[in-house]
Image (cartoon, rainbow, N blue to C red):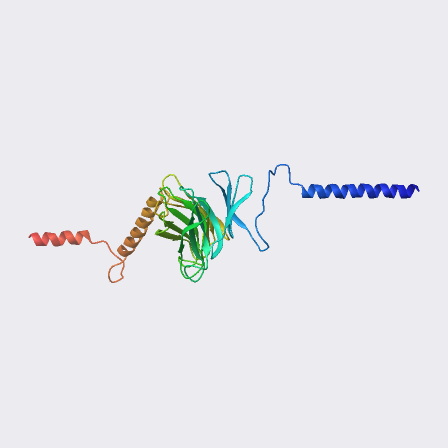
Length: 279
């Protein structure tokens, strides 16, 4: 009887422990205020989120989701041809601007895709940028002049496999200029900001430069996307150029036109000749 009682007590303790563990697993940590899930039976993912001026949130990825400040769904939108959105910003007019890539519009492969919507996510216009190979936008900003700048990767342009690609548009998405940066290997930009001097700073990765493998890559440009160099760089380049010119000049002086060693003129002979000429 004593053994049966002990076994019963152990079973009760075990059941209590398991139930407590289930409660702990199911419960959200005390520092989580709330969570929200949005999607259907297919794979859905969000690549970026921003807080909007009304206190709510906008998520973008395979589609666009707008919630209130507590995560309650207000509306969602899908756009034909959207492979994915990688970046979203709230525009100064209260609408939204999204950047990503599409295979349904533009050239044959993935292209940069820029979409402008109103405050309810209804599309106002869309633009594509790219060539015949893969081009993907990862970062987007609204610039101080009311236009937009996108950064990502391109395989259509540049020197290597994938190069960093910077695209600048006006407020209607019309292309103003574009720049690519990179070497013979893969180089990509994942983040972009407009800096106080009007230029841009891009962050990403490079296989073409650095210590080997993939390294952090920071690019600073002016307002036209032209890379800037340290203040000492022009002086260094000038010194290098002068060094090369001087080395070539010395090499030419070291030989006569007949490839014979150059000899100093005989000053005594010159003096004699000049004496006879005078007399």
